[in-house]
Length: 101
Image (cartoon, rainbow, N blue to C red; front, side):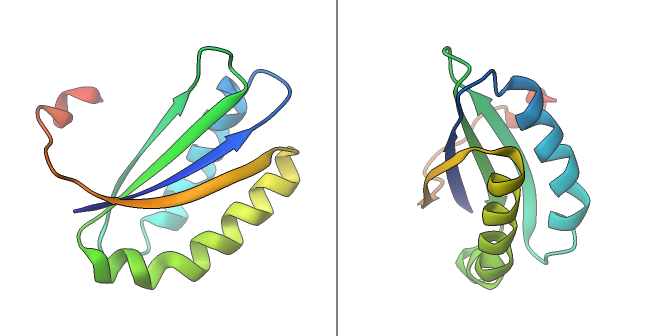
């Protein structure tokens, strides 16, 4: 399983805008084969958010990259936040994730 992590920074409380962005992206992301879910974290300062999308394998993550890049840029411009970066990680260990919902 792979995880793509996008980090954004804003000048205001990103809690509600980050949740709304994730809700907006949900149905669109579900159209990609190999999509496994999303987690969104908002930092203590409420000015940084991390969007993690989970992918079944490297091929699924790679196929979705161009579309996700366009969506990231569009949503960042609309929300007025700065894209700090996007990184891809392999999941080395996970435990009890189903209980997060």
